[in-house]
Amino acid sequence: MSTIDIVVPCYNEEEGLAHFVEVTNSVIDTIPQHKFRYILVNDGSRDKTYLVMKQLAEKYSNIKYISFSRNFGKEAAMYAGFQHTTGDYVIVMDADLQHPPHMFPQMIKEVTENGYDCCALQRTAREGESKFRETFSKLFFRLQNAMSETKMPYGAVDYRIMTRQMVDSILELSEVQRFSKGLFSWVGFNTKWLPFQTVDRELGTTTWNFWKLFKYALDGITSFSVAPLRFISCMGIVIFFIALIYILITLVQTIIFGIDVPGYATTLMILLFMGGIIEFSIGIVGEYLGRVFMETKDRPIYIIHHTNFTEDEKK
Ligand code: UDP
Ligand code: MG
Image (cartoon, rainbow, N blue to C red):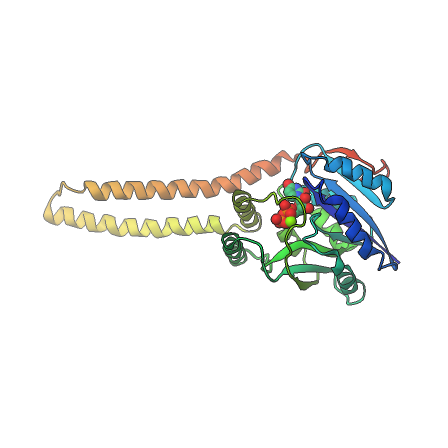
């Protein structure tokens, strides 16, 4: 018999959490050969998620909860959950039932019998999601994979089961700005990808908007690749050579034809163009510098306000 911990990050999930536990329990009941435990992480919800969690923990003895002092983000919530796991295997999934628990038996089989270290889910269809968002995420995946050594399959979601060994490896990556999709593939190990169809959120609303998604994409690229920095160095070299040619042409023209006063338009264009490029480059450098700054502060990834883990169980 193996022990399996289910880590569930929750942000404003008061409406759906109890239902989630019920549905998941009905699946767990069909797998008596393993012992399951929930680790619910309340990521500073603004609603009554914490109270719901507490009630659930009173009702079911296999529910542990951690409640943050504020919203630290899903990545922090997953990290906190992982840090508190002790099971032989760890499942991580969303609280909104978009990650169907009925896949458990199949996922567990891949890691317990088929020799994989991890079994993760990959979305096949994106029904119920806007075309705009779909196009954007596709673009992001392409860009990310082209720029970085750490490859992520398109449609990978944060629903997976991992061995203790893999979870421990992930915990060793203690960076503050976490990008789990990348971290999961960075640590390596054998992953079995299972396709699944996205379902609409049952209750509550998604907390993601376009701006958040954009920031997420930027995080994904900057935490696994320095390609943008290389790109600006290359751009600098190219511009330098173009400038050199232009300088020579102007020099020869001036010597042969004398001083040509008009040139206001070209001067202005070059000035504005170069100004734009410089701003853009500083922006990219700044993006990395900002990340270095955040990392060097070495602040904790999350702060716990309430939990039903005892002092000994805490890590
Ligand atoms: N979540 C979280 N902290 C946040 C945002 C989301 O812990 O700041 C949790 C949320 O409760 C859910 C999961 O992360 O369990 C995925 O969130 P959501 O369903 O809003 O995202 P989507 O399914 O649209 O990717
Ligand atoms: Mg969701």
